[in-house]
Amino acid sequence: MSDTHVVILAAGQGTRMKSELPKVLHRVAGRALLEHVLRTADTIEPSTVTVIVGHRAETVRDHLSNRPTVKFALQEPQLGTAHALQQAESALAGQSGTLVLLSGDVPLLTGTTLKQLVDTHRGANAAATVVTATVERPYGYGRIVRSDGRIARIVEERDATPTERQIKEINSGIYAFDLAPLFEALRGVASQNAQGEFYLTDLIAIYRRRKLRVETLMVANAEEIRGINSRTELAEVSRVVRQTKNEELMAAGVTLVDPATTYIDPDVEIGRDTVIHPGVTLEGSTRIGAACEIRGHVRISDSQIGDRVSINNFCLIVGARVADGVAIGPFAHLRPETEVLEGARIGNFVELKKTTLGSGSKVNHLSYLGDATVGTGVNVGAGTITCNYDGVNKHRTVIEDGAFIGSDTQLIAPVTVGKGAYVGAGSSITEDVPPGSLGIARGRQTNVDGWVEKKSKSREVEKSKK
Ligand code: UD1
Ligand code: CA
Image 1 (cartoon, rainbow, N blue to C red):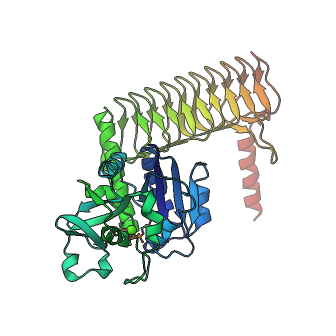
Image 2 (cartoon, rainbow, N blue to C red):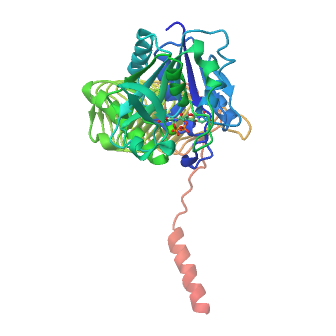
């Protein structure tokens, strides 16, 4: 929306988190609290976004380095919410229109509510609009004091009279302001209150005294405006986010055998008729196709999985691409830049890193393939290892189409096994194996005739001497 500016308060310490990490960087469903708020802000397409930082300002800035358009304003020291907003004045100099003020610790807020806030605010031509909610347990929140039905002021819990504490309509800490009178009016906020802070909430009474219009927007679902102050609240809100995601997926045709123990980040996509078993974690930008089966205790992060893929128990897959019809696990580890092509098979205790495994190829047991290119229809025997690291550099191994690697082979890179070639079991391959040849590199076996009998006789002689 044109002439809409967003300011997010994120300077507070978040004492109750008992953390080295700034509160707004704690994660809900894989994403920092502040990132949830920024994404919600994106939905109203503001012209500018300013984040007020203070406590651990550098850490917060660094976290947002992927958002070059976000402006920062430093609040140092942190003297309260009004003082925090004042710090945005120079970032917004010369701007007019609507300022939407958000807190960095309110991750469940929806874009729909934000849009309603802006519409209500503009529709009423208000100087300020406060988002409120009615809750059964209002403790800790500022209360909305009304007279003749209209908002008169906001009183903080600690400054409230016993009667005011009975009020169940609370201040969400989310507002829309007309920029024109705002910064001048903020200078009129004093700090005579229980905490000795400059309260932004005082602005409401100031505006009413000046006969400026103040509106409210009450949200139906109070959960949406929940601020996070403790680890318990972090866990509760995480559960709400997960539950919402799980319900969306089930509605779209995904089976979650036990939604309560399924952890799926908001951006993850899953196709129809895929079955997700208990204890599965799907993170980041992961996409999973249709008709897959993901067994218990699998974690997949930032990976693409095709259709009809079967992933057996206890696999870890990070930054990999897996084509249709592949079978993986149990106990497999796919590391970044791994690409598994159609119909390939990866069995137990197999690790792949920066490796392409061609279609229909098999690595069924106890193998490590790193920096390798494996063609189609290759069979990699049990216990095969690419020795890709010489202590200084990484080297590539190439195994061409249709090759057969015998069990317990070490491929000492850089090395190529040609098309259709065989490698004898137990080989340490240091030189290329030409297409169609057999490469074998191991000590020759010798059998000593009658060795056992000779040995036992010599033992008897030893005994008789004692
Ligand atoms: C504030 C409101 C309260 C409302 C509640 C909703 C005030 C005085 N009170 O109280 O009416 O019900 O939010 O959650 O505004 N912050 C700064 N700098 C500061 C102080 C705070 O950036 O100097 C930031 C915090 O990091 C946080 C937000 O402002 O993101 C709210 O601050 P917090 O201390 O949590 O305010 P509450 O006491 O919860
Ligand atoms: Ca708070």
